[in-house]
Amino acid sequence: MKNILHSLCHGRVPGWHKNSSGVAKTKTLTRKIENERLYFASIMSDEDFKRFKKLEHLHAERHSIKYMDTYINAFKMGAMFMFAVFVGEDEHDFEEF
Image 1 (cartoon, rainbow, N blue to C red):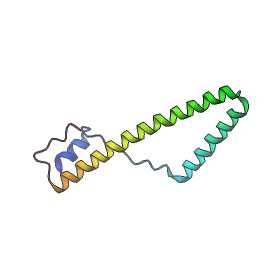
Image 2 (image 1 turned 90 degrees about the vertical axis):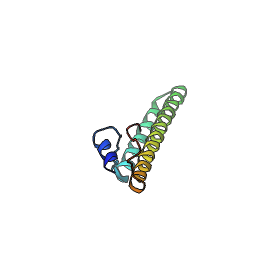
Image 3 (image 1 turned 60 degrees about the vertical axis):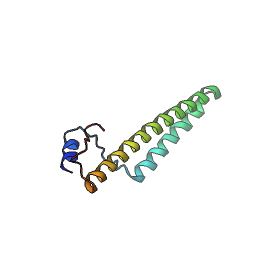
Image 4 (image 1 turned 180 degrees about the horizontal axis):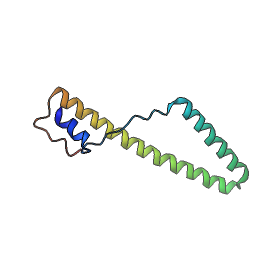
């Protein structure tokens, strides 16, 4: 356990901090985004708004890919910690994550 914690503290194993934005902040932000989207919908031509919606979808797709990558890496790190706690890590190299 000592080696993996040492690697984590020295930046050789990436770590993440929990995002504590909260539900209220998310709802407020979602409302603001929707208000802006409605504003642009009211001033843009139909063709421009279609392109704007495509842009929104591209942003969402990028966010989804980044989120999944973060989830996978966090899952791997959790599995490494579980392995280190239950099996030990003396014979295993966790430097290459």
